Length: 113
Image (tube, rainbow, N blue to C red):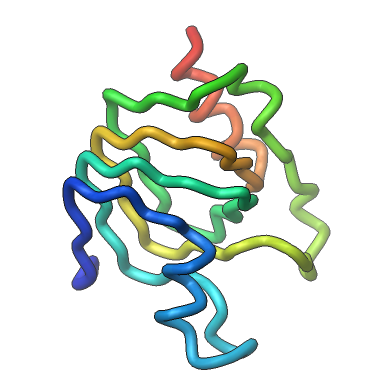
């Protein structure tokens, strides 16, 4: 369920996570819907589950340079912002890297095709 909705805003994603997380145990974003937002980093976002990006989406540079494939056998990561059950509709992304499993990375590659 996506109870947290942010629309038509410039979102400094690290600042948002710091404001909404209470500590290391819940670091990340769960259940967010971003509509027509400009998402700014620098940050690497980790798709842990149910991440959807709906067009139009603008990535600001070569999408391939922003992708960080993660081996499914790797269970611990540091220095990323985990996302669970998040939706990005018509958003643009600036200084954002995307980490995730092979299926997620391939879905993102479709935006350049």
